[in-house]
View 1: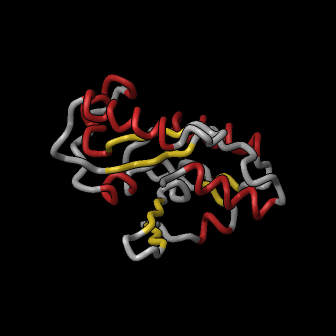
View 2 (view 1 turned 90 degrees about the vertical axis):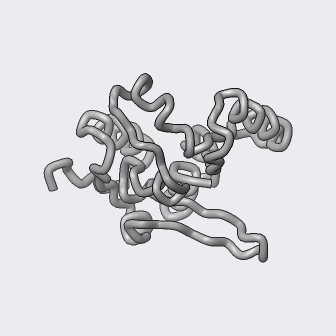
View 3 (view 1 turned 120 degrees about the vertical axis):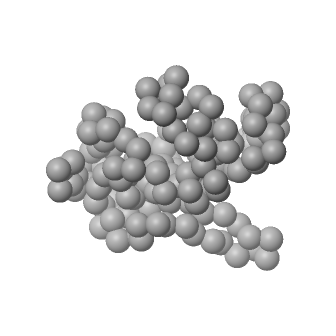
Length: 158
């Protein structure tokens, strides 16, 4: 899992809101560099739809190995292929949403947070300028701040 659903769950706990408040979807990410076709990803999405049918929040499955194939058309920015899930997470829009968690084969949770967890637990939004523009950052922070007014938004220029 990655990004928003994790972050927003923590924000909800810290601010006394219901656990699912403000969560638009659950991002399930995976990396399969051998199957880059839309059809292969679509099969995974269909499997996920069946697997997560009982969950009230929509699940969004994405193969991070193929993001570069559609990113320019959707966002107007050329993107080099990611080499791993961690590589993808490193470029996500904010320091707080650059976050992933997975359950290991031993049943242990592994958390990947390249910018640490300070911003998450202190309700701070700070841009990760690796990929996004100021406009994207401002739109995201406006949306989140409207739901969680306790958030502190670090200006783009800082």
